[in-house]
Every structure is written in structure tokens, then in C-alpha cells.
Length: 137
Image (cartoon, rainbow, N blue to C red):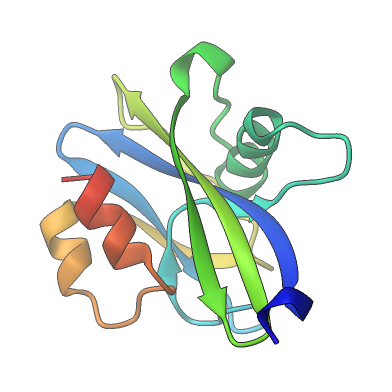
């Protein structure tokens, strides 16, 4: 029954520079292993969505964002059989391509990739294609 589904709040961020966006490749030990996605992570107790995305982007990429750089776009529900992920989506435009430092337990590769190329990738996390189509092109 849908009312018994677990609800999880996870924030995600489209980070763009010029016409490319930052994509991260999940390690084999993480949830959704060996898939490409945008920087994202769970909102911790007592944290706002904005605080969570700034923290998650820094933890996953080493990129330090400022609140005034981050634009909130929408909240997208992502449905799984036993869970609904409430996914607030943010977007950032960088003037310069940022150096990326990965946390190897979470991600093992990254790329600055055009949205059109992302949409051709076969191994995307659930609904990343919808997010890219709607917000990154």
C-alpha cells in the first residue's frame, strides 16, 4: 500500500560550466552502484535543503558553493517500489570549471559532459535523464 512507503529526502544539484554539466560515477559499494548521476545526498536532521546541497556538493566534489550561487528549481518525487524519494533539485552556474576532488568510497570518476551527451549515456541513475532534459539543456 502506497501510504506505507518510506519517504526519503535527497537533494541534488546540476552544476554547469559553459555548456557542460558535472556528472559523477558511483562506486560499486554505494547505493545505485556503477551509475552516473548529479551530485546528491540525503538531507540530515535539522538541515535545510540548501544547507544539505552545499554540504553534499562539498563532500562529494570538493567544490565550495555559496548560498547566493544556488538556485532552487523544483521538488521531484522519484518512485521506487518500497520508497518515495523527495528530490529537491538545485542548479549552479560556475564562471570557471572547478577542480573536482572525489570521495572514492562514493564516486570513482567524474566528467564535465554536455547535456546531450549525458542523455545518450546508458548507465544513468533513475530519472537523471528527466532532470537533464528539463533543467540542463
